[in-house]
Image (tube, rainbow, N blue to C red; front, side, top):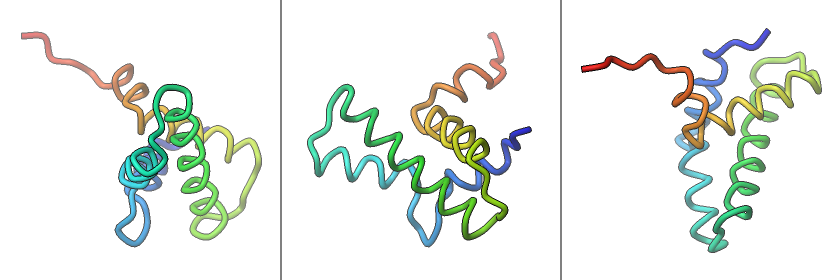
Length: 90
């Protein structure tokens, strides 16, 4: 149902702004730590996801928005990639 290529596209952002970059700038500006930092990440992920689903890749559905927001947020925080990236044992 969810295309991981779309998650990558959303992560790379628009006009030079990336999810990671905007999140870090806002965390520094707001001095966000702990739960506040996670909230900033969720809001930025939702914003980029909403923009992509509304402006770039319609149609917009609420379930798609929530699903992609979760995937983008987890990826931005390294959780999703950490669990789904194959490792090469040495």
